[in-house]
Length: 478
Image 1 (cartoon, one colour):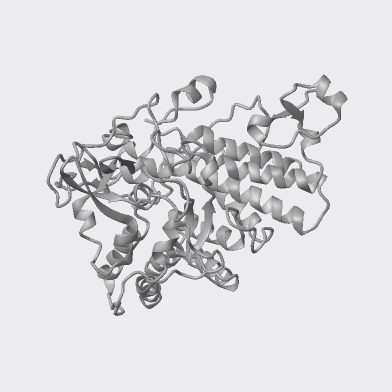
Image 2: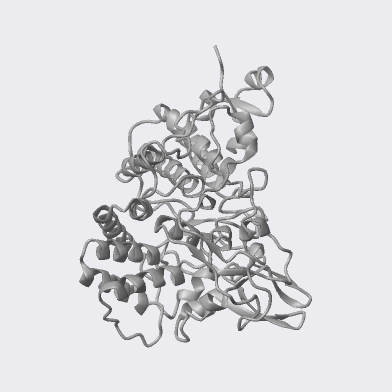
């Protein structure tokens, strides 16, 4: 009989078990049947699953690709700084290939594998709220990682045909499995199915750094938005906002918005619905992809494109929360300080805010607009703007102006937060960079690549070559 072992380096589980078994089995592993016995085992396993999100090319990534930086590097929000290290240059210049690629693939599938081990072994738990919650968290984590993989490696939902390849939607722990790519739309269906199954199971509050009911509903609003299912997106967003409010999570206001990025919020009032917890001991400085401290001052890696920078009004609290100015080598730059560091702690070390209420309001506003409910769309847009602009007077946009205002606020709100490239992709829009240079005011070297047309194959990241070599059933993107 084949016996499955869970290696400590992968699962981060305690090596509980009798001495005799440890002598007979590999010394750095335990049989899967022994790893999932008590509630404490499952708690360790779910925490280990969350830790996979901090992988070096995922939410905890830096120069080789990262949710904090790369979706903006690939888009029109940034310009590579001539004074920096030229990190992520292959993404900015679109010269990536299957051997030099944003390598999210193994990190995301590590999360999936760990979630699947939990789901496979749920039978060891007694029925009740603890079992339900663990199942809900594992399902939601599996869905989130597959969704991120689809956003990066597959066509957008709207542009994909019935048989266009997505990514393998893996629900097995079989180490010999060589899965083929699940069709794009079918894989999205499985993401939704996992989230819908998780929604009634997961707890209302699991503490910081863990998903909860409101977060699952917020993720559903995001996935439905990507699918163009407007009513479902609006309904999920409403459920999220109501559930979050019932548990003390409200939209930040102009007085406290800036403290979000310093990890200074009181969790009971924060608008952050799900954060990937990164502590100083992790040694993961996700802000390094944007800037570094040096004896000469802040050394920018990427700077804000001047055309985009000018879209932040003077009374927009996001301008000061997201950006700063620096002089480096006698040149002026506008750098990104969103990940500069928490109020107390190591430089460049902060939690990654994976889901906020601000996005959920914008999801619903866009959905309402597409449902021909402009009054509701405007109400959500004004609610968001009232928390971002000092002295805000409610807007009254209609028609195309309303739609453009929603998209503008989405770009401003989620800037440098892992959204822009994916939003352009789902909207079938081109990447159109400005003619400004890297210095404050727009002087200096410009981006060498100004235009990526809508629908270009470059919107699909190459699958890593080692995966193609290892799995004969995986086909490469064009």
